Image 1 (tube, rainbow, N blue to C red):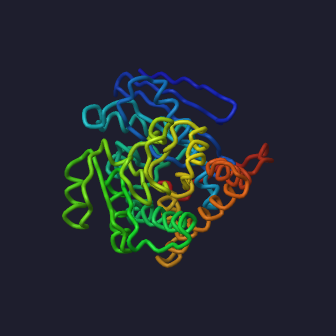
Image 2 (cartoon, rainbow, N blue to C red; image 1 turned 45 degrees about the horizontal axis):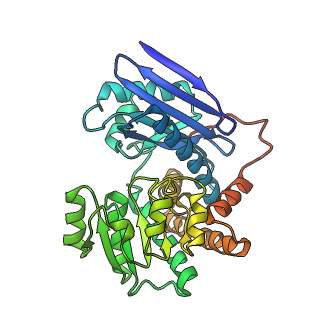
Length: 357
């Protein structure tokens, strides 16, 4: 027996709360915008303590996806889904198929993809019950993680140039929180560019790999955010930048792959007050979705790389705009994204997904 609740707020187009007793699925799908195209966004599975926390995550993440695609000039809107539960204990094929069935009912308005707690293999199971999946073998030929990491790397260079007057990373120090798929590739880019890299991960195998293969200096997960460094790169879970943590930061640039790095929107102003150049997450971590789009268009590797590299100019524009207007960088990034959204979309077309399985 399944139960579906539809909620609405003033900002999101649709918010669905889902419970399926047969599979144990308890999930939320948030569609922020389909003004530019179908709402593409990953499915996060996490053992949220309260459903309110899951809802807040879904709403903020879906908004970030709208802004991410808009800033990158992609024909996508923003959406996100979250499944309440421990992926190591509660994830199973029946649950994933049930999730796919609910995605299918949205008829392409939301396109699901992997995120924290889910994988490409999971998405292949989801694809058994819905056509609207990104990141399966049918729609994706290459892992987008290196492209996400490259976009963050380009953003770091832009942030370093803004803060220090020179984009060179030789001798610069970077602290990476999270050395999973994206964090590891980012550490590789940075070490090859001559940076000194500090790293931390709650999973020992990820940290050991980075230490052994890249020469990353290991730091405790409790200390990595406050490591003295030129650049801090949060590449794990979000909401790590809050009033308390910002007061203890020892960096001049923040540029990482994690979504929702700010615990609250006003924390953007806290970073500005401390003179820290914050490269907004939805501007800097768009490399993966940019690469997915261009793969679907059968673009060459050179074209895909150039598209990702444009992230650097976006970040530069945001940092310079914030400095000129004396406001936080997230405010500028959100304003630039909103400019690219169509405000006159009352006559909205049905969104289509070219990569449907």
